[in-house]
Length: 397
Image (tube, rainbow, N blue to C red; front, top):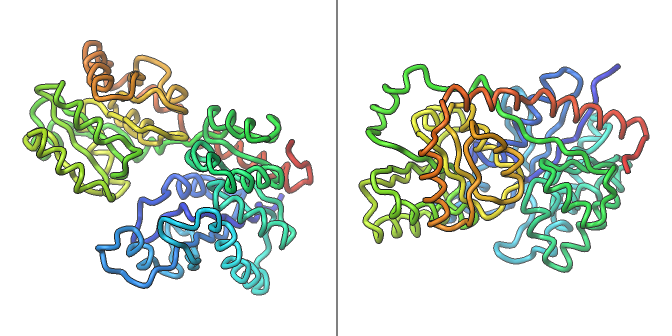
């Protein structure tokens, strides 16, 4: 049986200037390709922007993206598409589609052949992908990942396009059962949606060999929390910082970068927490393992997630988690060895959750053992089975 030929399509994909952007999409694809049963051409568009001046933040980083690059032996194309900052949500799928039509046509004319389009993120990517699929006669499998279905459908025009894309897609993937339920609410037949969670690379994310040395290098002397994620409001870092006022004796490391940095730095100063709370900035994905391993617990105070990879990454390093009671998290944190789910998602709720966890802190070896079964193998097998059914003409649902 020949390998499946995929056109992987997503704006949520890393590139040289934003190496951690959408890395969970890349990780899933890497493991799929490692099976030897699939090949992929990656089309990962980035918004066009005229300047690389760092003052423009992510827009400047996208401007610095290479046109073509190779990551993990995967060739990736980053064509540009027009995007309007803070505006144009309803037009985004159309702008993306129109910019990608000549790109796909060029690939086909150069001899590339595809069995299906593997689209990640429902809006605008999945919507545009279904239009591309119709134009070029390719079935589309669309993966929902979080905000694309639990926030964007609140807007009338995007919701209509999402509902149409759900109808047009050959099959749907959700990274958690909670997201599957939302897709069903949006009109998807239950048997059209397959839940395929994200996995964790247990060889990369593992307890440090000398944890004491790592902690000493980071100048950690007492109980330490870590919060990993982009510095955006949705990740809730501000709540975790405020919770530190209720947690004397604890230190907090925040890993990530984003537009909220100045606000968070101001909050740390306002709360007089500069001696206990550090903004470490962004770190390469591979470097996170030591930071997780050095901490005593991870905090995830997000208001929305699909399937939070940071939870499994932390557990794989032996570090239990304190996670908000939001979609997806209870599917990850299911035993005391993993940590606990807290509510409400407020500074008081976070602080109470931390106190409760530390009152019965699990053994780090038990936390690691909990994470070990969450490899990518099951997800890869599920993808291959689903893709084969779609290519074989058995439209799911």
